[in-house]
Length: 68
Image (cartoon, rainbow, N blue to C red; front, top):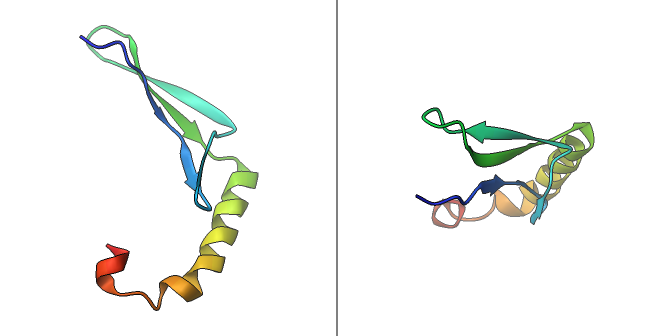
């Protein structure tokens, strides 16, 4: 049995980032921590929204194949 904890960070504006807070996810059978999930705060949300708006004009012209 592996004791590795998955660390799920935020992917914003082309970079992996830690969230303002993170929650531990525990295995139901033994209670050990199996994952750490980061949550975005208002600042991270604004950064993500801004990055999406900036990427949209370029991305909308790409093919369905590239977007999948």
